[in-house]
Image 1: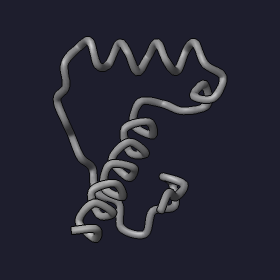
Image 2: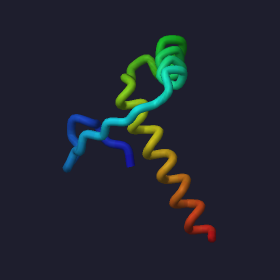
Image 3: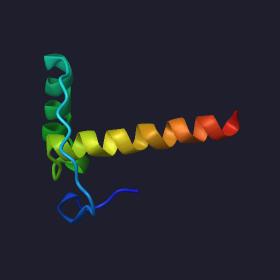
Length: 63
């Protein structure tokens, strides 16, 4: 499901507003852990959306 963001077939810009605490938590996580050090906020959020979508699809299939 995940792709290199520079190679998306049909990219669409999505602008969202979130609480400052959430952004600070993402920034802290990216700064403190090596696993997320290579990412930027947009990539972090894109991956989170993909994971949540997959989780919701799995739940819908089980019903």
